[in-house]
Image 1 (cartoon, rainbow, N blue to C red):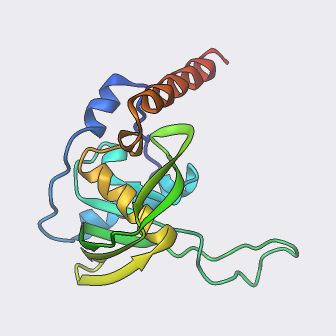
Image 2 (spheres, helix red, strand yellow):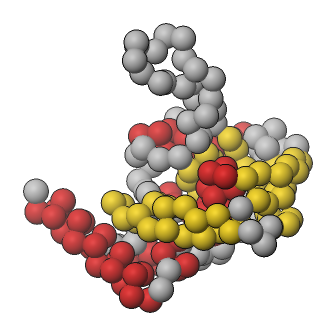
Length: 187
């Protein structure tokens, strides 16, 4: 497994890639599984809870997530609420149905570092995807799982979470990310 560089919006070349629509995956093979392994390693190292392949420059409809909702880790130190990893793998994900009810959630993104803002998305969705073995899965999801799924699916369609914000808030987000990047480069 390899940790890959995460594309960020402060770099014009990265942004151009992030705004592209990702291509469907024809078959889930060892190459796709290796990509998912690299994505998980990259996501855990960032740290984050979801990552789309486009965020590491791969224009493929592949997403990984780990919402931190795995089983409790019996080896965790006293006082820690550590959970075992529970990685989820999605190839060619899609939303089949979305509720009219919206769920507001303060989102962040590894490609938009250190910026968070509230986005309203459907509270419940029925989704379909191919799992790590290439089997088709359909399930109804809600809460953080639904938010993260929709956020990552947006990435595959060239949409960033800040695209759901007003123009003023989007411009503020971009300015802040660029400022943070300049400060890091100067340090």
